[in-house]
Amino acid sequence: MKGTWKAWVENVGSFPAGDIVLSADKTADRGVTFQAGESPADMNNRTNDQNYRVSGTATTVSGVITEQDGIYFRIGLRSTCNQNQVRYARIAVEYGVGEQKVKAFIYLRQGQEADYVMPYQKRVTDAKKMTVYNLKSPTAYYYGYKNLAVNGAGFTDYPSQVGAYFQWANDKYMRYAFSNSLNPQLNLIIYLKSATKLDYISKVKK
Image 1 (cartoon, rainbow, N blue to C red):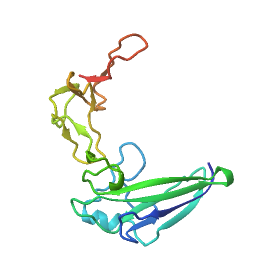
Image 2: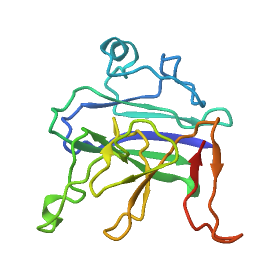
Image 3: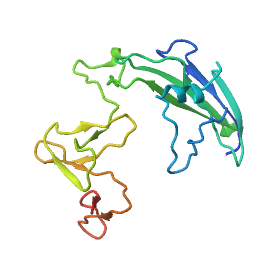
Image 4: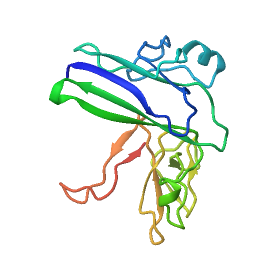
């Protein structure tokens, strides 16, 4: 799709006004390649944050979609939240031409603490908070699968880290944590119930 695009901070939510800034400038971090194996800088490192952070105060950015360039912009936050705080906002993105114009949203979250899915006014009395961390086997590295006890899983190191694949997680069946390893030195074994139907999830095995 060709045409123009525009992105803007539509709803600051629980962020302070002006705290969310946008930029259409490419990052100076050479580790960002948008290719497999890229190694972007750790932005928790203060030096990297100073060198590669989104600068300026813009809350709206725009550009033109061509065959070479799609939609590119960066989102920056000007402040941090405390350890027990979670805050949300919404970025709107509009692109296309005429009747083909599309409006989409990016939902922004800062903070890693568990939180409720629904706002306070719509919650039921026994509502539980949902964590942003995936579950994995307590063993840091493993191949194949592990048989876990009830509540025997652990959290990943950070929210975007892939967890294990679980199934049969109820009181009758064991809790299996299947490896998500993509080690190319391993063979992929798929257990088949028939020639056309998978009975079990794929398992990685040496």
